[in-house]
Length: 248
Image 1 (cartoon, helix red, strand yellow):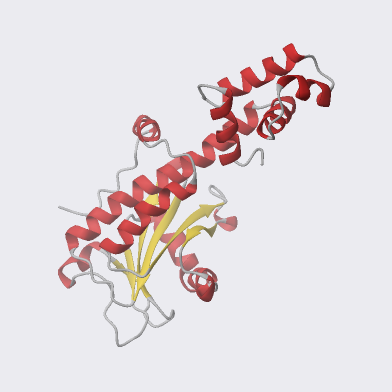
Image 2 (image 1 turned 90 degrees about the vertical axis):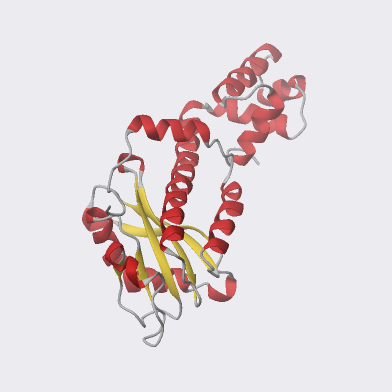
């Protein structure tokens, strides 16, 4: 049986996953990514998104999340300089994971008998070895999740498990941005202003005085913002607006 199937998820399946995985911020992804990093015996991870989708000449890989640390701040650029164009071409044609060795004297991650289901990149370009799992979600977005280190040697079952988890991680990350965009389009400037002042501890009368509105209008704005943010009350709406970055 070939791996992976190359089957693109349907819109219905994507929506079901979004409903199940209602994470509130990117920080919610870190515990899951750390668990996957440990499963791979890796020392770091990174998520790269394909930007400029639909325009091949403008496509590039953008790092969305990583835990390489400040001492390895150049890893992201080094990776895209070394393999960026290859990965962009790869994701249009294949969903096979990719591997590379950080030195010519090192073995690339993954068991030898699993090599037909892996794509080997040129070794010795980067100071670290790694695995890159492509995730192709069609109109929702595409990208790669990387696990890097010097002692990565997962079994074939672990590679399959990691790839499946990567699909869920990427869907959750992209759904966050979709919800943020939807909320930004839905909330009016007045609603955001009222939420900001409410978050600052102002009561409706104070907000009304500050914005030159009636108390009834302020409460209407706060009520509509609460509904648009899919919150059960004003406090939850303020907390969600803060998490989404609309107010501080």
